[in-house]
Length: 443
Image (cartoon, rainbow, N blue to C red):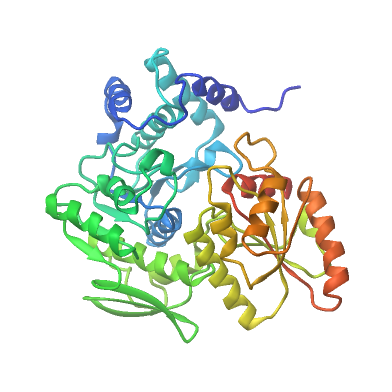
């Protein structure tokens, strides 16, 4: 009996509708949405989030704080880790297999075989599903870039957010940070407030120019609001006052900043509600404590992979894949080491399109040893040998492995030979595709 979900076959058909995986224009998307009755115009207030790093976390924080008020929230994120269903959350729940198949087949029928990319046609299905369920807000993550991204069809969102911009996807967005920031700033709409997360100066200026052209009110991290870690707490401050809050459930100083961006977005979009303020039971506090965002410094505490690890080892999983993200993760790991000192080992897998040397250099002086793996089933994966060369070029002691199981066996041997007493801290990192494979294999 075939146990493969029916949606898998539909999604596979959709991959064949355009010769390119990514083709950044909006004409095809707008054509299909028009044929579907423009479901993107029938949504509750939308928070639209772009950026290179931290945009998914900002979405997760926004959703958690909105739901902590008792509100119903639709959310779109990408890519998924294990199942496509993760991309579409309807009023707080992942879309069901039955409804996913129904909306996919409906947009497939209306599209009638016309050329369209996978992200566009599945995005149309997402908007269609959103339009058919009542909700109080939509949290919408950009897929790639911003200006020509398939999500950039909301004419009047309640708020736009642009998280830190870095060098990533240069083959589609350009090799210059200012050009990439300009593409991200393409989601800014006339008169709609834009929250700008921590930025490189060049990126910030590019975003501000676009906001000025469109008369969009600007709320800038570090100027109009800020969030920081202080004495084991999170402090958020803006013109409305100061909030003394618990640290977010998500680990790392960068997540304190991401949470601050989400708070600013909700406050100035008018989506904060009466409860979203200071108080023991406030929505902000509850959201910070309950937020869930897998593969962002996620501590794996059980499962087959954990069972195969060295005794009493800590296993952490992160899907970040560029140098900016690696720097944030390495800072978070260094903070963990200050509390409990453990030798750090990496298991790393990356795509060929990523800056592996730049990524791994962030762990120089912190990681004792790196085991490199190819990402199973990914054509664009770097081979374990090529990634081993990158690790060596980054100044790290390294060895290649055949797969995750072999990598863990190697770390067993390394730990026995070099660290006889202190249990290790193991970080599996380098790619969301590797993170998805880990979560699937670990149950």
